[in-house]
Image (cartoon, rainbow, N blue to C red):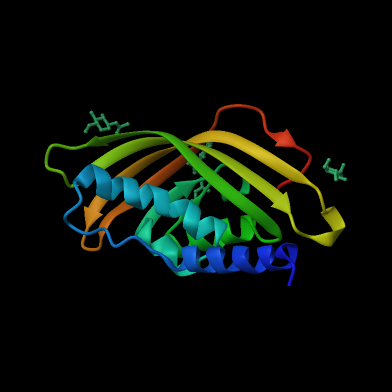
Length: 169
Ligand SMILES: *[C@@H]1O[C@H](CO)[C@@H](O)[C@H](O)[C@H]1NC(C)=O
Ligand SMILES: *[C@@H]1O[C@H](CO)[C@@H](O)[C@H](O)[C@H]1NC(C)=O
Ligand SMILES: *[C@@H]1O[C@H](CO)[C@@H](O)[C@H](O)[C@H]1NC(C)=O
Ligand SMILES: *[C@@H]1O[C@H](CO)[C@@H](O)[C@H](O)[C@H]1NC(C)=O
């Protein structure tokens, strides 16, 4: 077997094993680190279309505003279903950057600002080659619940024009 033939196999093995990891949020981590783990689990949930993993990111009664037709997502089911629908037919990569986390004095609530770059590529034959790159930030409120730190409120804010020719939503 030539090396070219096995590269996709290796890639798919890597991707499937990566997708299987979910953070354990061990209490040995500081609150800042635990919140960081929660925030950074989001790209794994959406990019690997891992429905159950959204519950490791958002609280059951969370509210999220991703603007447009995703402006009013109330509850974990609406958030998960809306976001998964927004990437169906797409390969996506959400790259998080600048992160500032403010933890309240009682260490039970927090807010954070996290920059993202979201790259979305069509995998649908009819629109093969179409892509868009989105630039923005997530402004989040978090609460330390029984299962650990979870986002209770997320507001997406776009920071620059989109690139590419993929028509979304
Ligand atoms: C969602 O965010 C948009 C853009 O900031 C805002 O105009 C809209 O009022 C928000 N909707 C809700 C339900 O919060
Ligand atoms: C958002 O959705 C809730 C129900 O989930 C509804 O009660 C509320 O009126 C909606 N708000 C807007 C601005 O559409
Ligand atoms: C974020 O948290 C900090 C520290 O607790 C607080 O001073 C600030 O008012 C909060 N900001 C928002 C927008 O909630
Ligand atoms: C969008 O751009 C890609 C990459 O250049 C191209 O393959 C595709 O045909 C373009 N689609 C449209 C609708 O222009």
